[in-house]
Length: 103
Image 1 (cartoon, rainbow, N blue to C red):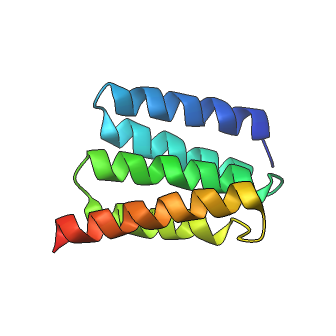
Image 2 (image 1 turned 180 degrees about the vertical axis):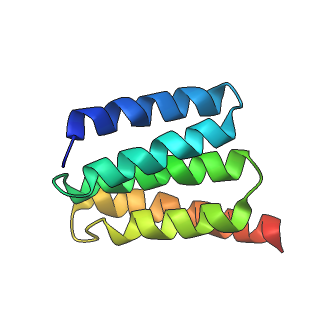
């Protein structure tokens, strides 16, 4: 069963938990949101949620997980779309920065 409005609610709650430093709750909420949104959301919405997941991983020190989540977010974006191409470029920049940290 799809629950897109519930997915966005979980996404917001996940980011609020992240801002409070509760990374476990944040991850749990975002993963639930991704699962709820996967059946009927636009790819840009899933990319946004994976981007948020990567932020949670980055803030909690899980650099490799953050890189992987950014990669998944990028896979949902269209490089031919001007706005999405800019997002891809920013995310690729973040990936490179994180790889430098992990090295």
